[in-house]
Image (cartoon, rainbow, N blue to C red):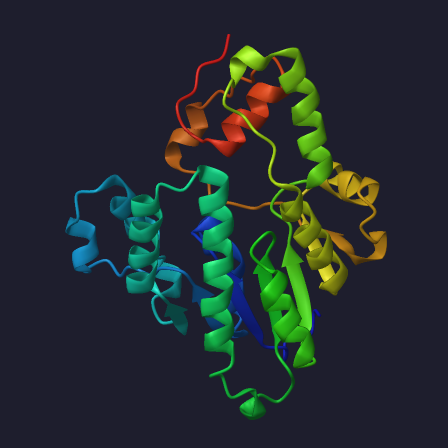
Length: 256
């Protein structure tokens, strides 16, 4: 997997980690495609839209990938989001529907890629929870697969659930995900040849969830700190539920 002659296809829903994985691969000339849900160039008219959801599309781009081969479904995403709001779907249902919608778009694109021109079969990278159908397709093609695990999985939810029972007033609307969410995730872990996590904690919780240890690789999260980071002082919440809540709903939360 470390061979510099390998080529990669990255599938990424959202702008997670500021596209760190495809950016790194593009710098080494190994990125064949970044397939993402939305891609908005700096001069795009999308940036002029006033709606909060649409304004977030302004982050769906990175200058490091200006010349990269990117495939996106921006217009289709807008139509999907509009449908979900008209139907007044609940948050978890909407997220699961979005993950499923995205995978269908990715597979359509993958089927259009002529990999016979590659010297070797590509390595496919995709992030957890929106990966099962993509991984299934990749395996039918004989590709290596890498799953980017975005959190410690079901064992983390068990920790959050225990804290919720102790402090329900901190997040009265919190709900665990539907069981099928975790069932699909377990299948993702089974299909992936390699699973990337960013800490020993995540690795240990995945092992506790019966994920095969030899698949798990720790790759610490690396990011470029802004100038404001020099004077930044982190204040941690007093309990695990508050931490989990802040991770799930990022923003200027204040916990007491």
